[in-house]
Image 1 (cartoon, rainbow, N blue to C red):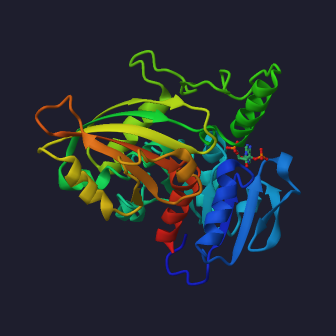
Image 2: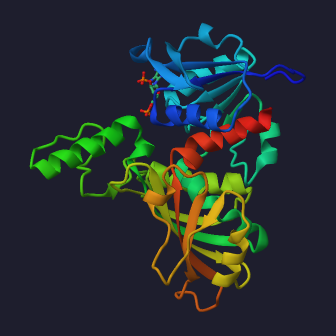
Length: 340
Ligand code: A2P
């Protein structure tokens, strides 16, 4: 986007018909994002469809290079291969791309941004800004204010990841396979590698034979270091897909440089941006996907001392965040707002 441009930007959503794309439309509308034009792109399969925006149907077009002429801000969420091919084209035509895929996240010249954590790095972009992995955003947004107060030197986490992270087709597979299971019908899974209804499985990404970690776990580990600007933080992750439609949960245990109490963590998080405490031991009420779905803040609770660390440096907690909102579309639109 050219500096000094005063008119409202032309915005494009690439992957507008997808699970994240639909939420991008919703976030732009809800947050009253200033635009002179909004263009919706998807694959040729969707050309001619319409999606509602500000009370009117907006046509979806097949993504082409020419379609990107004149675009100022491109919000890309159509997978890595589409981003690799079309994001540089959009940039060459003068756009700034906020990319939700993993294509550029670990590139040295590409900022990887969670606006509550490292908003200033947006300014270092050379055309592309990467939106982090959803499990990484949901895990580390509540950890940042703690890390700033008392550096986290070691983090162990386990995720409980919803179908939405694998796209609209995976959400449909969860619905359909659940119906089939309850009706006693056979269902052959085609999107995810294992039966999904009333089951859970290790995250559906390739495992690195050298480390034993899958790609999702590796992303969480590497992206935490990049976003925190702390290459020394030690992270171990176990990523699991659970039969939930759209909000991810994460169990987090972290060890700080200095002793830290559960009460201190609760106090830090009570005023933290992008976070809401849901921590009621009396009622046994803690973060749940059903409460996080459709919500902007990440819900945090079950905050307690980690009893396996008698030195008092470690705390455990449980979070739930909407994968499609803060884990993807909302974070991307918050980044775009920094460009205005
Ligand atoms: P389409 O609906 O036409 O397939 P999800 O992550 O929910 O699966 O969504 C993926 C999004 O990316 C959809 O909007 C999809 O469009 C879009 N998409 C997939 N492949 C391409 C492509 N080659 N060019 C443009 N958009 C694509």
